[in-house]
Length: 210
Image 1 (tube, rainbow, N blue to C red):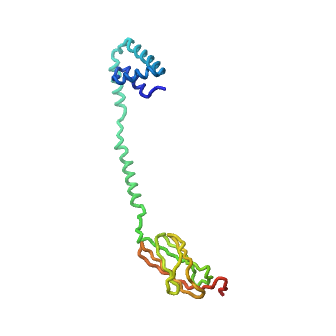
Image 2: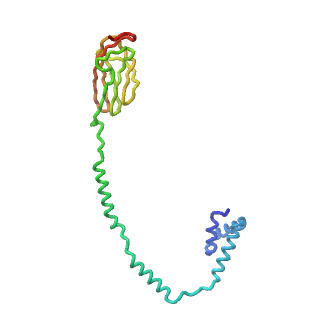
Image 3: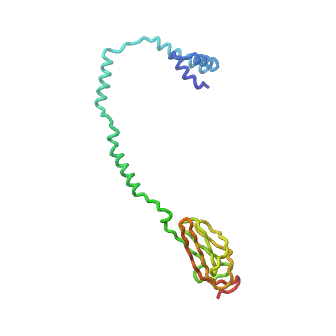
């Protein structure tokens, strides 16, 4: 396999532009690379033949005819004025992009975004077993929230198994009977406070709500 620098060294050698370091490098390659040595000998032989070939003078008037044809072809070809030709295209593109920018939907600040909070369970005037009692709600758009639950105006503990866009409250300490359930949803980002009220009738697990 030929070294990567052999072709450049070969060209420089034929042109007579080798530096002393390149001359030493070329000799090292020729001593260790048989294909390189054959290519060098063939290239040098062809180069010597070309140098020895007699020079044939050009016919009289050839230079003048060539220059005349070049000038004539140059006059026939119109000059390409790319900038003026493309200016209307660029202008139309700028107008289109400007219109799209003006029509883009403007992001509404979070404070101005309508917020929907629904208390899905318990339903109003529901009759439930104490073991089935859950408080379930949803928020749109999803955002951080804090909850407070009151049973008959008394705050009670609970366990929330929901996420950012919903809440599922379990393990509320409730007893059988009629109760007023109050769920308070605090939205710190919007500095809002929403209240929901439900009246429910709870029956001990295994009992009959009727």
